[in-house]
Length: 410
Image 1 (cartoon, rainbow, N blue to C red):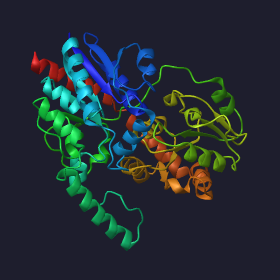
Image 2: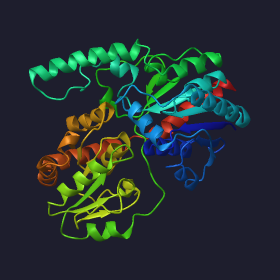
Image 3: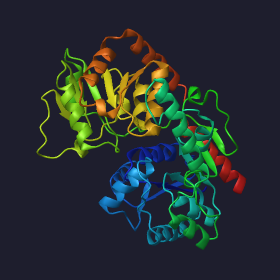
Image 4: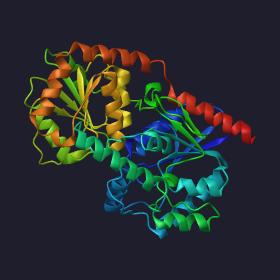
C-alpha cells in the first residue's frame, strides 16, 4: 500500500475532476490524499469520497484571476510572490512527509515542481498535449495568429518562433520560483517550460493528436481523462429532451466569463431550440436570459449522450472530451491557445466547428449551431469519434504509470 498525493489547482474544475478520475482508477490498496488552496471546486473531492486537506496561503480573488490569466498565457504578471511560493512549498513538503507520499500527482500547481523534487518523490502530471515542450518545439504554427490568409500564416509562424524561444530559453518564470527552488536544494525554475514539466508527463489526448510528433523521454500518451460527476441529471434535462425542439448544451468550464456567457445565451435565444446551461457560477441576480435558456449548476455532462443534439463549448479539454465521448457535435470558441488546439483537433475530425470568442455575440454563433443541427456529416463524425473514445481510459493508464513508479521505488 502507498499514499498518492494529488495537488490540483482547486479553482480549476478540469484539474480537480481530472485528479478525481485518476484517484478512482488507483489500485484500491493505495490511499489517495488531495490538497488545495482555494475552495471553489474542493467540495467535489469530498463528495467523491477522498481525503482533502485544505491548505494555506490561498489566493485572494484578484490574485486568483491573475493566476488564471498567467496560466493561460494572457499576461506575464504573476501573483506568485516570494513569500507565497516559499510558504506553499513548505506546506507541501510537510504534507508529502507526513503522509509518506510515494507519488505526487500535479494538477498545474506550479509549486509542486519544487516541493515534490525537494522531497525526492516522483512527480506525475496528466496534462493536455498543447503547449507542452514537444508541442511547442515541433509545431510550425501554433495558431497564435488566427486566419488562413498568407499574411496571417506568416505572422503566426513568426509568433510561434518567438514563443518557442521564449518558452524554452527566456527567464520568464517568476523569480520567486528560482529563489524557492534554490532555498530547497532544487534546480532553479527559470523558464516557462520548467514550470510545466514533471518527471512523468502523461498526455491526456487521443492518438490522432500526436500524428507527426515525436515524444521525448518523460512523455507518454495515456488517453482522455474527463469528469464523471457522481450525480443524477436534473429533471429539466429529460423534460427538455422530450420536446420537439432540439436541445443545445452550453459548457463554459471555469475559465470563461460573465460577458461570454451572456453573449452566447442571447444568440441562442434567437433560435428555435431549448438550451441547458450549467453556467450559474458566471451570472448575477440582475442578469436576464431568454426564456429558452435554462440555467443550472454543474451537471454530470457525460450523461448527456442521446439527450443533447449540439453543444457550445469554451474549448477546455474536459468539456471537449466529454462532448466527444457522448457523441455530441459542438461549436468551440477557444479562449487561449491550448483551447484553440483542442477545438481544432475536433474540427479536423469533423465533429466540431470553430469560432473566435468575439463571434459569441454575433449571428455567426447561431449560424454555426444551425449547421450542427442540420449537417448529417457532422453528426456521423461525432458518432465515429464517440466510438473511438469508448476504446480509451486515460485514468486507468495513468494509474498504471503510478503503480510502476511505486513498484520501482519499493
